[in-house]
Length: 435
Ligand SMILES: Cc1ncc(COP(=O)(O)O)c(C=O)c1O
Image (cartoon, rainbow, N blue to C red; front, top):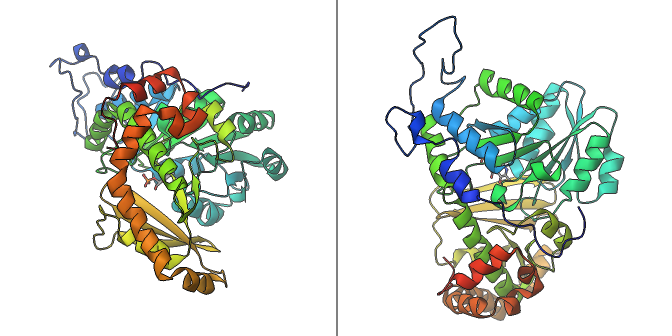
């Protein structure tokens, strides 16, 4: 894409599409404004020889069809498909590859996706090369004669690396390779990979798209009819389908997606700026900030950033744990803490809070870790970390007010350059605050 001064504009009529697409009340006898939940597994057939829209719910369901059409519309694709989870959407992707075919995957990717490509795909003779996809030369070198797919998570989980989707797609097309993008962290409100040249866009609907932490679901959207045909066959015959009730929940959740993402964007910029100025924080990673390594690429392909940011606390495991322990909204129910070790040098820990997740990573093989921890376990540092959390809860109201009064001072040029609507949103908030 050519040089652009600011971020991409927000998609036109996004909320209108979410509210109305495929949901015209006149199509139902009841004229219900809100689409019906259809739990029936089987459907009456008037004419056994005629065309049949619905026969059996795994093959097709009216509530699922509505959601699939809304998803296609907001992703700017022709076809949408829903799955019982983000991971089952990824399973369908794997079904596009045959034995002895090869795929290239970004080296930083969410744990379960990594597991699928690294350990499960190999059982079917599919081999994966994990590379740094932010470097197009590295991707180019990784291409083999049997490469079928380049899979990118953008931004990457959890280090928020940004990949140039346009360049990767161009390279892939020249080599007749498919490009798939996991867009879960941004949603189509902020980034639309199909418009950037990707062939498939995936979402874990479990996250922002549903937005209420009460269902597990996934989706794939494509422009190409042949891909839709292959993926929908896998969806149906392998039974990777979601429940109609869950589909209804997502139809409802999408109606507030734009509003929620606007607020996530504002919140994360305020928090990132706040953390960036704090002496116990080593580094903040937020793609919407100029300090991000790939800020220029990011603003050319996205309309803003979501609520996900990473930061490095000075110190080690002890400091990180203490920080998490003293977060005021912490809720740590039994069994909600999980650890996974998918990179040999890092141990990733997830702690689920009420409606939010903290993922923290500590080096496991760093011999200097103990030394470092002892050094930083000194009382003053410990207190500083506690203070950081206190400051977050006490000062964020004031931070937000200052941000609204003087958004450019807080966010420098990045917000200044953002699409006009974004700036309007910021200015129009009378009592701006983190929600
Ligand atoms: C970026 C990303 N992709 C895919 C998934 C898997 O989605 P699901 O949990 O809905 O199966 C996750 C889950 O955390 C994720 O963060």
